[in-house]
Image (cartoon, rainbow, N blue to C red; front, side):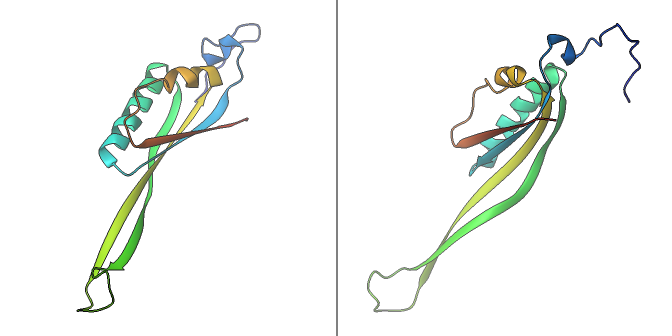
Length: 123
């Protein structure tokens, strides 16, 4: 719940910098769950250190991309099949912060194979 601030006095929060507060959605995508969870934890820890409003990481359903192919290069022989699968994991993190603060937060060591997409929405 928000606290009352008398007129003429400013709140000692993020609003002091004069920067506009944006809703920021960070989408993380990877094939490796461990690297993805490590980057999510680092982002959330950095945002909480700056005392930002954070929600997430929200775990979205895993996409399973499958390819089924014949083992034999020619069409002869027993009908044997191979099935290959690639799993794509996705996480969402929502922040409410000025855009310059997000640049500081996202300036972390990103694990290999993790893709980050940052979307900024105005209120």
